Length: 253
Ligand code: PEP
Image 1 (cartoon, rainbow, N blue to C red):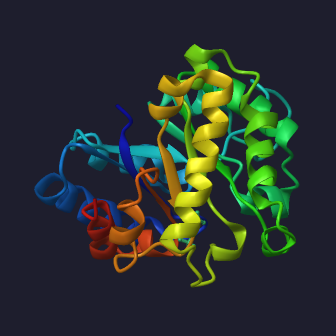
Image 2 (image 1 turned 90 degrees about the horizontal axis):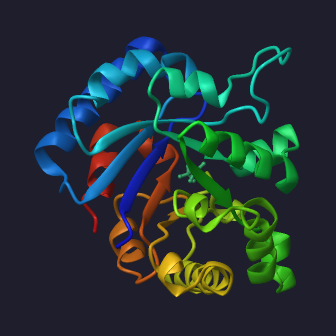
């Protein structure tokens, strides 16, 4: 049975004082209010991961994620963070292939395949992001475009490794714009991706894969989105910076 997951991507936001306040509020509310069936994850800036873990560790269904890792094991890559470093401080998840990383840092599907490999080698759970631009959606071939992102970055994995991956469908036109995919649009893509996964790894593996929706998801639209049969939770940007709203989203199943 696939997991329900709500992950908050804090991006490049919050000072340490603000981050501590946010994580302690989230930890208390998750402990008291969120069903243990739902895995909640926070992805703060890498700098704060170890400090914030003291709060998340106390709550069984609350974990921490990095927002990225480098594709090489170690070496002369100034400013970068490796998967082994994340593992060494007991980080559990890593977001890979966010559209901002693809757009501003030129990350390619090929490079992301390497990042997925090194994350898995180090026991991290990749939250692999995919999604189309508005031009691609309007051009009509958006379903194929997004499934090809999965093919190119994930389909080299063995079934055992693939089973450890979480997918986040994030239409670029909905990220940080206030425009949300309708539940019909989200369900159409999620069902398409699950079918694509089934064709490669079999129906059981596809049915066991968590596919999250991301893109202006908030406490108002989460219940309708999460009610879609193929939507298994959300990757939340802006709304994850407010503890009450983020936890309300985690309670929206
Ligand atoms: C994101 O960046 O992953 C995201 C979904 O952002 P937002 O919720 O702000 O659209």
